[in-house]
Length: 73
Image (cartoon, rainbow, N blue to C red; front, side):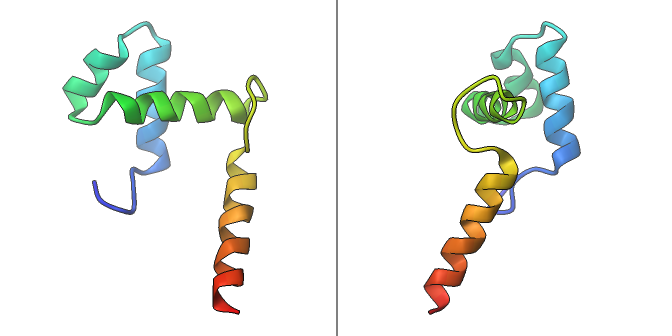
């Protein structure tokens, strides 16, 4: 889909499909996206729910913004 990525509502629907019991590989094939992409979304979803280590989505956004500001200097 390019550099912009997938819309949040699409990601949510994909995660719901996997949560309903469908296999990641099956969902990825049907929607023509990488299974690794889905695994990344699942991992980030776990982090956002505080069920795993890592930066939450808002923390990642803050870090990206700080890096952008630093590059401008």
